[in-house]
Image (cartoon, rainbow, N blue to C red; front, side):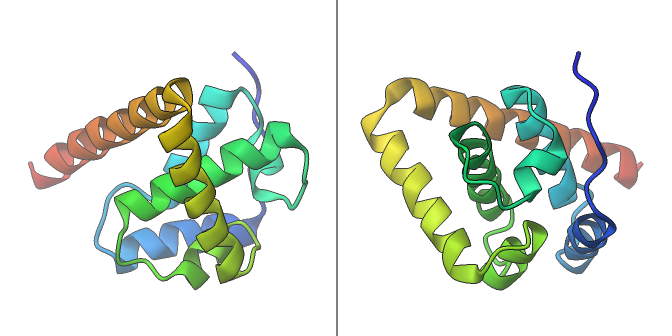
Length: 130
């Protein structure tokens, strides 16, 4: 397994704060980490503004999955997790939707990640409720 660098304090603070505001035990930072592990890249590479395809695709997928997990989270906050503008977050979500429509393998990968996130979120919620 690959060693991953911790993202900047800005990202962690916003990611955990957002989860608390939205009343979830699954912070967006955990979603970013799940995506990073799946794509075998470091979290730092996803949250930075690199335009390399190896990093833009997992970043866009993470943004998409955060939006799916937190539909009421403002785009400004989602973009802020990646030090991006809200319009870039919207563009990322649109790009993932387009790719899911045209590429069945990509769609399967994203759906698998979403299932993993939902299972992990449900597991954390059960332990917190006990």
